[in-house]
Image 1 (cartoon, protein in one colour):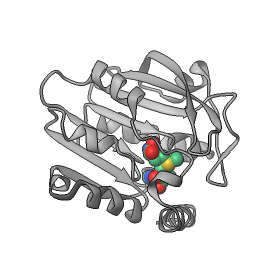
Image 2: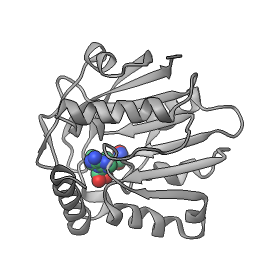
Image 3: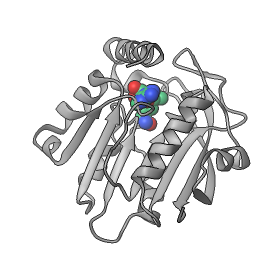
Image 4: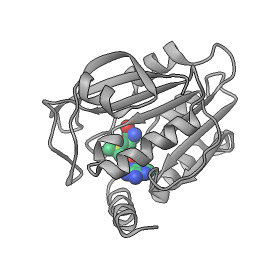
Length: 209
Ligand SMILES: C[S@@+](CC[C@H](N)C(=O)[O-])C[C@H]1O[C@@H](n2cnc3c(N)ncnc32)[C@H](O)[C@@H]1O
């Protein structure tokens, strides 16, 4: 693990150790937009999905009731994964829990759907973004999809005290070499204390190399 990565890990372990799941700014009790977009691109039966930087999100609680053959949640924070895992009880065994930095992984196997809400925007170093997109290209086969949600141009400049990059449809498209932007949607997330945050959701399809 390089020093950037170990700093990142201790930051996120601290966040999840000190705050409850429902008190973080990104908390959603229902990931409605994610589920809608996943429903649009997931294979009708079976298929493989990974929630990248899923943290303690309840998205996985919904995914286990959908007909996926393989479900994985990846996060740099073991504490976050532990929270989601204990919430799911016996259903946790249906899920692969991957504690890792997404910029450092070489191989994840294949996934038809890659979902990321509010993780890619923390990659302010272009080298980290390149690693991320290269991993996505290796992981998602032709015809598979990425769903990437980041802060929009009018969104916050920081999240969890960390700088973020903000995107519009064009700048998001420009990051994802090897993928075509199929559609994008704006969404306003409301934090648990009532502050609005502008997001953009991009849906990308993997092209042939
Ligand atoms: C703002 S939270 C979003 C969590 C979740 N996606 C959601 O929508 O509730 C960002 C998440 O990304 C994770 N994270 C940050 N950097 C990461 C990295 N380089 N690799 C893997 N996970 C990372 C954090 O631990 C945290 O759970």
